[in-house]
Length: 183
Image (cartoon, rainbow, N blue to C red; front, side, top):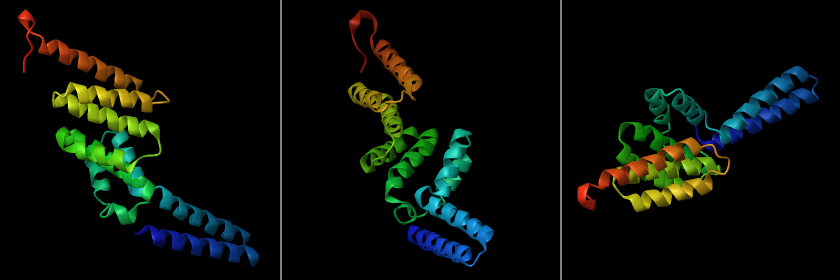
């Protein structure tokens, strides 16, 4: 359903609720008001994205992908503030199947912007992991240092520590006998 229709339906529900309260049907007015509030809430938080996040937390990637693919045209169905989160979710689902293909989604999520800094940090940690897989240590360090700056609430400290340990392992694997590096 397009977002404009959600707003119109919510306004109709609010008008009906006010009308019911004016004519003395308080309980029905409150019930219709709550339903209108739920519809208005779905304008700001798309139900398909919420369900996708729930399945990702449960680590059921197939169901998460199924719900995310139900969003056909995210520019029309989602609020403008949710476009970055949509690309982040696609990147997370795609990174479980093919990590190298998910890079474009994480970059697009960063480009579109997200309001929560820990989500930005998550996208940058994922990009650092992809850069490490490509053997691009400089870019991986750049993304990791940016992720540390963005993780203000220290929600991703464990992932950052693991990523730093993997970078150190990458350095150890490159040094061979005689001090020469493998390329």
